[in-house]
Length: 289
Image (cartoon, rainbow, N blue to C red):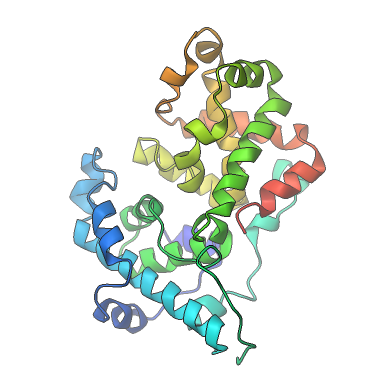
């Protein structure tokens, strides 16, 4: 977990800051959070033994309070909360070029509508889960999770979820470039990425078990940029290419992607970075912002 925090450029957070958020109790998103917590990796016994629903609820409510406070600060022109402002000078791993990858105060008031506001959305519990599983404390999990959703993929957790929709379109476009035949087969069966890959984009593939492989995949994503999950989703399709091409109903296969094999997916995904056009790669880098 310490390595994740370093790769995400997330400095340590004082425990009392987290505890203050927890003491605020149920956030405005508490009802949604309660509906989601019991679903978090419910089929993984290792996760259930290590992470309690109460822990998930506390961290998600704390993040929801922080996002709510940040929204009020932007609207009213106050200074941003510390955990949102203190990262602003850190380098951004998502802006690492593909060449390096294949060889990382008082402000003006603003108006923000619900579609633009970063807040709790269904699926954030799955993004939070690996942090709680890998961390030694809730404070660590909170720090890494908040950094991820506020700096690396805020577009995934805005009301409109525009980053997710951009990511889905990019999955289709990347697949068309790297495997035209497979792309044509899926489109023929009306299997656009929005049909089968929504959860994979939103959760950075954490929705696909096993959790141990998710952790390995996230090591790669945090080292080279979470945006590369788009290439990893395409790689998951290419790994089962023959199975999809030989099936008259590929939708049956893609109802749930096969179990993750992080090493194999990463091996498939890396060459894609050199095959896609430069402007498309730039879109991948920025799609979740």
